[in-house]
Image (tube, rainbow, N blue to C red; front, side, top):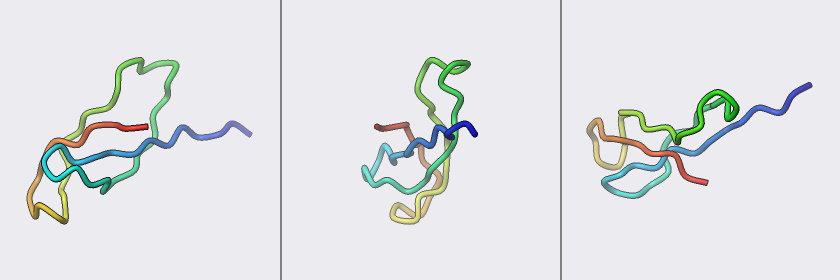
Length: 51
């Protein structure tokens, strides 16, 4: 069974890791950037993938 590629998503405003997501590293070469709700900022902000 293949291991899932789970990545952490970090808020670009408050720098907290608030979400996790899956990504196929063979198909998507660049890092993920998604607009998600941050519970610390209390608004939707851009979240970027970190190691």
